Structures are given as structure tokens and as C-alpha cells.
Image (cartoon, rainbow, N blue to C red; front, side, top):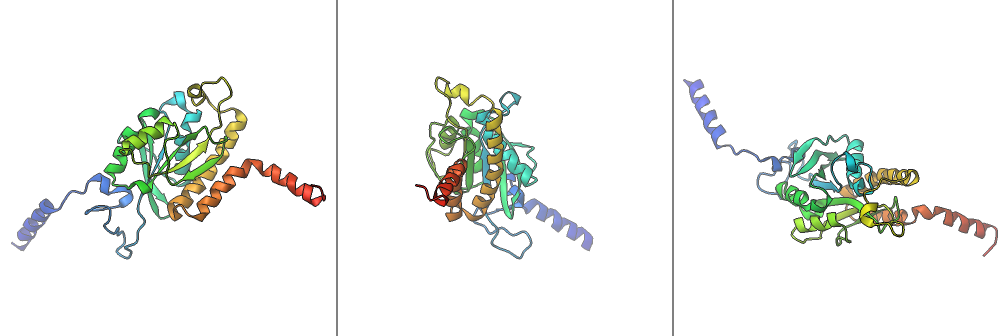
Amino acid sequence: MLGLVAACCCSRLSILMPVIPFRYMVSGLSQLHGPSLPIIRDGSSYNRPSPWLLVGLGNPGPKYEGTRHNVGFEMIDYIAQAENISIHLIHCKALCGKGHIGNVPVLLAKPQTYMDLSGESVGPLAAYHRIRLHHVLLMFDDMSLPCGVLRLCPRGGHGCHNGVRSVIKGFKQNENFARLRIGIGKPPRKVDPKAYVLEVFNISAREMVNSALKEGVEAVKLFTSEGFFESVNRFNIMQKYKHQKIDYLDIGKIHDSGGG
């Protein structure tokens, strides 16, 4: 008789227990009452870091692999490889992967909508997983930066980048999200910028970009763990002058020889 009563009670409890939507379970985060609820995994800590949405922009398909416009996708791939995160989920029109950078939970995403419609994926992703804009980092190509130069920005406009423009539209014209801009250099004279971004890098440019993507992994680790503080500002300054180190060496030689 007691067994029957216990079974009935368990049955009733299972009916009353709520089903937790997937969006509350990114990297094991169960936020039953909204994003402000403390996250507890082992019952010993109420100070778990909030999740980040890391998005790389690009165009899907083999046709666009290795092109300048797809360095955002490549940045996501570098992060995934460095942190052993598998990108295999299809969600909100994006390829996604869940994992951690250090102790920070992250959702990696590569929108599959094509560049100019990226906001149709990124906006719903952030909304579904209830990730606030100040915990979104968008990574994309930038013609205004020299090839292989990175820049972390806490916010900004679209800079005539259609993918970023679409993401801002997906966030209801809100621009208050971080960006990692990846320099691809300006197109040569008489070269259409639209054609330029869809071309692959030459050998020397590819080496610089690959090196920059490795540096980008470290920058993302820094940014997600510490936020936009002095260390990130130093990173931006180092990036700005990293291809001008020879100039500093020459200046040093001049001073050493008593010249100038």
C-alpha cells in the first residue's frame, strides 16, 4: 500500500514539475526565473559568470571558404579549436557550439543566413538564450584596418558593413554590443570592394591573418574574463603598431649611434 501511495505522489510531482526550455540550459545554465537568478552547479557558489554569445560573421558554403568576408567564421573556428568546443548544433539559423572559456560559459555561433541577413539569426539567438547585449561579441572583417590588425571595441556603428548593419537591425537598432574587428586591408584602386571581400587572401596576407586569429583567441579570453578594461586598451595599442616594429628598431639604432 505504501509503495502505491509513493508511486502516486511521484506521478503527481512529475506532472507539476515545469519543463525547462532549452534556452535556459546553455552550458548547463538553468535560469528558471530569468537571467538574474544565481547560477548553482555544485551548491557551493552563487557567483557564476554570466554566459557570452560569440558570433562570427560570414557566408555559408565551400564557395566562400577562405575569403576575406569569412574571417569572422574563421575566428569562431579558432576559438572552438582552442577551447575544444564542438560546433554542430543548428539553432536560430546558425551553426552553434556550447562550452566554456576558462570558467565563463559561451555560445559560439556562425549565422547561416548569408552576410547581409545576419541579424535574422543573431537577434533571435540572443533573445532565445536571454543573453544581454553587453555580453554579445561580434567578430567580422574590416577594410578600414590593415591586414592582420585586430581591434576590440565595446560598441559602435555599422561602419558600412552590411552584416553589422543587419545585426544592429536584429537588435532593434541597439548598437551597445562589443565587436572584434579583423583587418583585411583596403582594396587596391579600381577594385570593387564587393568583389574584394569575396576574394581569397594571397600567401603573405593569409600568414598575417592566421597569426592575427591566434592573437584573437587570446583577446577573446581576456575580454570575456575581464571586460573592457585597461588590458584590452593595451591590446588595441599593440595591435595598432605591431606591423611597425621595424620603425622602432630603426629609431633605436639612430639613438644608439648618436644620430638624429
